[in-house]
Image (cartoon, rainbow, N blue to C red; front, side):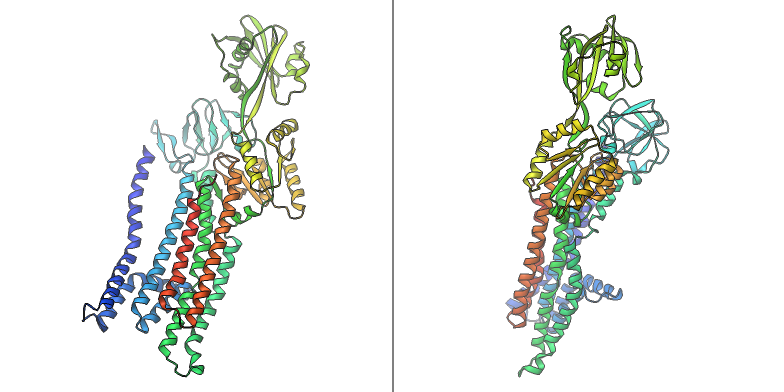
Length: 637
């Protein structure tokens, strides 16, 4: 409930403040329309000279003053030629030559364009924020003799928190309970769930698998991986793409040229034109200024990238910056890790094979009775088996380190474990077990080999679609590198139709392989991984993609793109979003330049009025904004 109320309080002030930002523009718009109507129909004879000037000045102030202030501040900071200055000169100039409605209109449309831009940016930011709300948002903290639910940000270091089954650990800490089992597949890259004893470290983002556990916090929320992602997202827009940086630099050089050209348009004709009229040429120069203002470009390009970042966030994909949207469009080789990337990192029984003396169900009951006494993650997978009838009970169970369990079930001596346990107790193991790739649990009953169970890490539901999608997006080479056994890695690669795979690799081996790939001409490598062990490779590849639903701090720090939902099928979606963003940005550039050049020529020739100038500038900016917003509306399948 707590968080729900919270959201409620926030929404209303936000919508009120949103409306407030539009009030000055609405006020100016109403005065402008009324003024133009009075001018046109000449209904009020006294609406002339002084009153008319005052009326349009009042209409101008709400939208014009903030822009003039911005222009003045940037001049004070040594930045003379900004779009604010161009707009101020053009509109004050229009007032100077008596073109009051045009002066107000130019500034009003410019202000509306700015409002639309900030609305589109806020929307993208909200998309990104909403995505991060799937992170742990409450912690049960022990205070004053009771557990209370608090926002993780309010928890201090050294406090005791409680985590129930299936919940994410909200903060990094140390285990206070006797033992706990956590799914840390994304933190370690290890497909076995992690069973830890009292005093060991537990990381934010791990999932508690069994029993209620208590943890003493070791870090503040702001230092946890979750908070660091939020921070990165806020800064994503600061990492500009090359196109964006180029346009910014372009605007810096272009603006002073335009100002001097405008001065030239005003003064030079004096020397060449017989009936030179200063007012006419000043009006043309002002039109020239308004048209040439680069705001459509300066607005629409970052906004295109912002739209892409927002669209990606809506789809559970975090790009750390606009430059990675561009980088993603150039990738032609995808290298992926196995555990936690295409597989779930969770064990499941794959096959039950029992000796003729036992039916599978009876055999499983012996095995389950023994495993009930074990805390091992593999035991958990075995206990999920559904056996009909009454359960068996085991007695005198004890563990033999590194081999398995020994005990009694139904007055029979039962052994459960690996081949070493069987042979050391004189039990002959059947030869078909030699070729098995997966983890295997063998069972001996009364000195006889009773059978075995194979246990494997399951493929993620969308693993097949992921590979198909990557191929469909035109990527020619897909490679798998894994720390898991080579035999298992090859089998998974074969099942998914991956071009080439290699298992049994240490982190430095993976790094070597990727460095070799990068040396090949025209190869742009994206690496997809999820664990701490993948961090060096994520950093080295051209684009590092981390599975971040439970992703480790380090993987999330070093990756350029984070897949929040842990679904590998999102990778082809990231490629599509990158490509669409790039297309929209180039459409915007072409639109802005095309329209501007046409109207500039018309303006210099005296064929365009201030109204066409307004369209060329603000109209194009609005079209570009709408084009960029399209990105957030698109459906990505």
